Image (cartoon, rainbow, N blue to C red; front, side, top):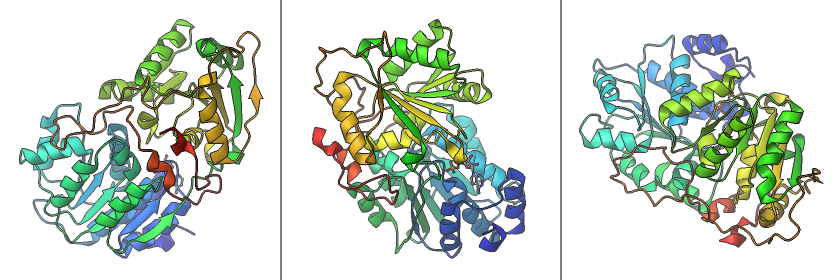
Length: 437
Ligand code: AMP
């Protein structure tokens, strides 16, 4: 299948070929036609599937087909959970609309609102936003959503994880009832289905899994290790392997910072990316990592979502996630586009239950190794770390909060996340991580 056959305009085809894409990805093949036909769409897709182009291309096509108005009211709103994702989606919108007469803008918190308000005042066809800043500007009368024709809710599951439900409801109330709705989510819990039911009108359902994340295709390994020896072991693995680009996951923001400091001290350049970091610091960390100046990027789960990093040879779980599905998301960061990748997990005694749950979910018994000098502690308790322990859980957002969207690196999660069924064969239904709640 070609992009031409999807019925996209010449101006979009030109932008697509400039990006170097030759074939639409599965989610693009499935989502673009129904969106172009004006249907609401519910899509199961995560980062790495090409989902952004999946909604952006037809959205731009529709807007450019219909007559523009002189003062350019916001006609399409794309809501994303994090600042990073907003910035990335916006970058995509900019690239794909290069040959169209459409204006776009992005707004998120953590930066001065004045330039954002000024851009909007000049007229914007497509607005990419995080919920907090959007509602802030709206409540100050600096933007109106009364003319929105197309609404995109990206990474809806993360939106709920981060406590944005109220904000989403508020945003929806301020848009016209008659509009086209597109909702993207990697997981389909009961809450997500409920949200979809409330927003979407007879949606066409499409799904795609990232090419690489059939977990069987990724080389996975567990190192059993004493909790206190993890930093030493990770330093050894990175140094001995001479690994140049490593994404490391920690469960907490504090843990991410601490690990970064220690790696830096050991002569391994590292940067952390999480919700407590300023926008500037996050952008700098990411660009340093992409350019190779920074060898190790340490991230929390939510901060890592939406990061546009094309290919990662190594992903390390410094700690296992306590939501098993996050393991699949994390290791899906490696081996993209058919390249070989390795996912390593450092597992201490108190993570034994998490490990069992993950193995049950992916239906694979992970090979275990022990490195001499970094042996597990035989006397350590295998009692699981309780949810919330050691985590900086945030209180649910107040809907009128002044803070911006997307500033959380961690959030408390509902265990009901695991109740939804997905098509990826490596993700089994009836998973067991609910046990701990
Ligand atoms: P996304 O899932 O939207 O975050 O996209 C993941 C990556 O795939 C991004 O780097 C895109 O630029 C890239 N991409 C999107 N669509 C295509 C395509 N049809 N062919 C090749 N790469 C693509």
